[in-house]
Image (cartoon, rainbow, N blue to C red; front, side, top):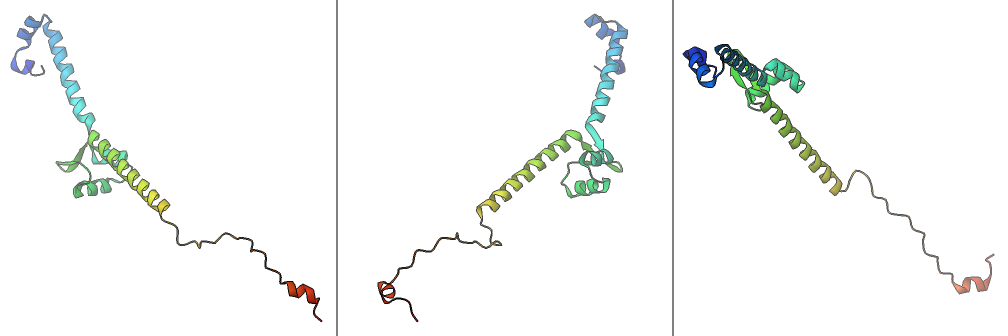
Length: 140
């Protein structure tokens, strides 16, 4: 619909739809503005990406060059699709949480060897008393 003005079709479109020519122009302008803003709102540069991920811009570019972060070299800088970055964060968070769970379960199942295991203290059984010892009396 944005190309109607470019192709000279505003007047025929207005006649077919019943809108006035000015209304069709306004609709086209509004549609073009929405289209421009949606592209820029979805993409961010390296500085904005660093803000989003709470790290430095150099670290962002390093991660992007290594292929860990989804980004694209555009001109002299990098651009990122915000939705891809949020998906990356969510995926990494799930992965790290799973690793922590596995580590915790592994630590629970293995006894700790750094602490000595002390046996429970039991009362010793009573000693048998020989019958001859009492019959003779105390020793001098």
